[in-house]
Length: 218
Image (cartoon, rainbow, N blue to C red; front, side):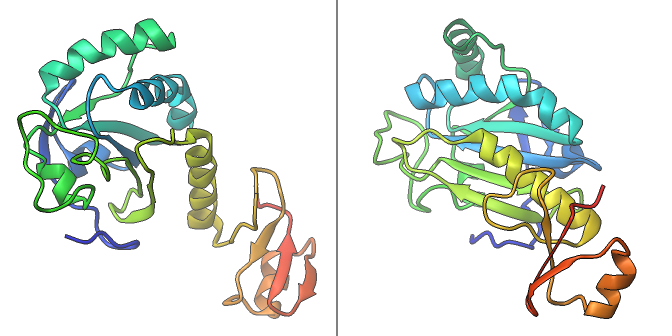
């Protein structure tokens, strides 16, 4: 199936390193980040999983749950996490989904629909299984990122993107290029000048009729 922004994230039941979950129920009233990996015991993914373990307190502060997926069984995940802790200096502190039959990878359009699970897998087989999905408490997909096998993901950027999405959800503002928390934000064109003046009595700057910036709401 094709995943689109603004649509419901597909629900599923899966075995994880922390037991069986039903995805939407596991999300609850939190935000969620689902990030996938092509195979256990692979170098780039080992570094990514360790870094996400170190970042988890930042996601916790943002009411966001994180969950990884790899297209191998949970029994392999339990051995892999030992390597991750040894080499990355951080123990995996979030669930990892087992997806040996590729059910969830296909459900989220992470892999070619004709790919088959089990048996030896090559880099070509796994090429598209490096995705990130940010999902809101309403269970809708808010953002998606897809990376190639050779390039490690920038999870600091995922955190920044999450901040922008949460700010938009709370205050209905947009963020400009390279925005960081605390920077000025953009008033959407759907908001009239009169409405903007009422909402932002401290004032805002009009660079063009369609480009108005204001201090980030608290």
